[in-house]
Length: 554
Image 1 (cartoon, rainbow, N blue to C red):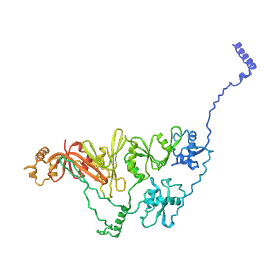
Image 2 (image 1 turned 90 degrees about the horizontal axis):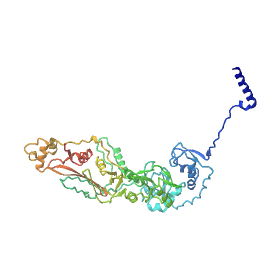
Image 3 (image 1 turned 180 degrees about the vertical axis):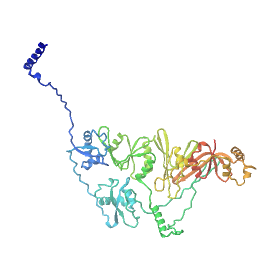
């Protein structure tokens, strides 16, 4: 054992003399990996609320052509942003440096006018969405001849910061020239943001349409507006108070309310088009401007405030263009699957509907004005007619959209519950008041409508004939079946159709036909409905039109 320990110690001594490196630390291996890191070039910018890429670059002096050239580079510098069209507040975006902003282009000389300064006034105005300069000046009382003669140039002279008349933006404050001579109606009061200017002067109201409701066993109802004799014009005067405590202040308030109603004008232009198309389930894309990447390279710049982008109920996209566009721009829109519909700047509803029908003949079809559309839905007959009526096909189902525009402020609204009855039949009525604003009576809860079930005593009380003995016989029927047999035997109970119709201005008409048992010869117009026609809204509408409705028991 001792000899073995000495041998080990000797070997260690010899090794330390011959291999001095053995006693050092073990060899360590180091590996190096080269990773290419892109230089953080460009300027950092934190996106604020309401900013988009085009606005950010424009604020730094870049021209539209330079922005188009920079877009691929900006996309490469910002791989963390998947869609440059949808910047979010708080995002950090890098913008290239070293590209000189476009030198200011020489502006064309501003037009000079020789309009005498004492022939017009000036008025501040805040531009609303859908406004055009021609419409704004017309509503301020400027004749069309003057607008296209000298007032366009005069407008540019009064607004030196506006480059041309086609660059008005929503929310922009401008100065308007308003004529002073007495031949033109006085301009409306200064417009506040969110309201529309209203010219003064009452409008001539057409004759009030008449509703005709008739029930004839087994016959079809014929309706026509009743002729009205022309009424002489009468001057409006404040009503004389006839109640204690009412004085001049009450008469003044009534006069002011009448004047306000008279000076209100119908809603027109793009806001009116938005209202009608939105009710037809079209969706207007939000925002003022947007840029869409084109396949391959390039971008499509769309100014939503002048060229709205609309998504149809069947999923297609339309660009309504009231301003001229280049062939290259239209080709780019078509490459993105957008239909470009060129329309006139006055935004006529009929023209917009016609252009949509021409672009999508398989999904959107206009019904010819003056022609009845006859439908049958669940046994109920419908007859529809209106100047603007469109059929929209979506998911294999067709919906009828009918624009019902009242012509006078005093014209009655469609009865409560009729919209719900028509919606069940896939008929969407867009009811507008005399000022082209949406107007319909509120929907009643279905549970709040009472639907009476027929009993023999309730029917006897409802019939209430002048001579009960001659009507019912020497004794009253003891039950419902006996009552029905007695009524049929004397010809007082027949199968037929209950009719109700409503007529409006410009040839609008809605008519309903409901199968029913009709009780005649009594004091009331009584109809007995089968269970399948016991919808509370239908019963409510028929009751509103003068029928006493009962539902037959099971």
